[in-house]
Every structure is written in C-alpha cells, then in structure tokens.
Amino acid sequence: MTIHHIVLYKFKPEVTPEQKQGVRDNVSALPSQIPAIQSIITGETVYNHLGHGFDGGVILLFESRAKLAEYRPHKALADYQAFLKPLLEDLLIFDIESTA
Image (cartoon, rainbow, N blue to C red; front, side, top):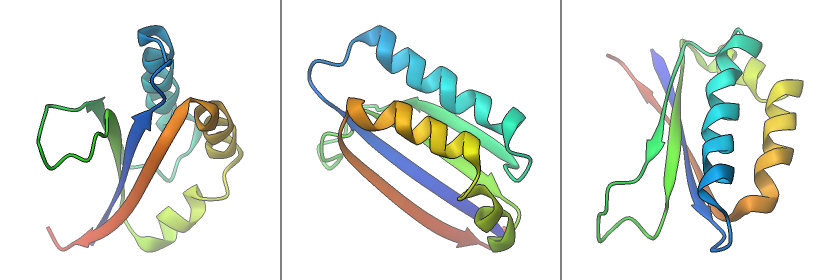
C-alpha cells in the first residue's frame, strides 16, 4: 500500500513569487530531512474551474500508514509549517491509500 499525502495551498494575495519559490524550495528539502518520505512532487496549479482557487501543492508518498505517522511529528515538518502558515489564505490536506 502507498499513502499519497496531498497538500494544496492557496496563498494570500500579497505573497510574492520569491516567497512562493521559497515554499517550493523548503518542501523539496523535506525528503533529505525526513527519512519516512518515499518521494515528493511539487508544483503550481494549472487552471481548472473546479480548483477552488488553490495556487499549488505537493504530493508526498509514504510506503505505509506507519511512515506517515513518523512524518507528522517530525521537527523539520513543524519548521516548514511555521514558515508556510503566515503565507497562506487556505490549506487543504487529503490522504489516500492506493494499492498500486
């Protein structure tokens, strides 16, 4: 089983392109800091009228629920969340488990 941890961001209007790049850089560094992360994909949205205004996001893959549980309390994640929080208007996190 693979866990897909999906995080969607909606940035505040005043967030600059440099700050958005900082978010991508910081999240891209997490796999080197948190061994439980199997892989990561990050990017900006491609317009979809059903996208609810989200600007971008990240998909983190974990080999099991246990690995996801290891990730959640990690200090590197807490530091990333503290960096991210003041930039966000909205956030959506959704986990799915796949058999493939």
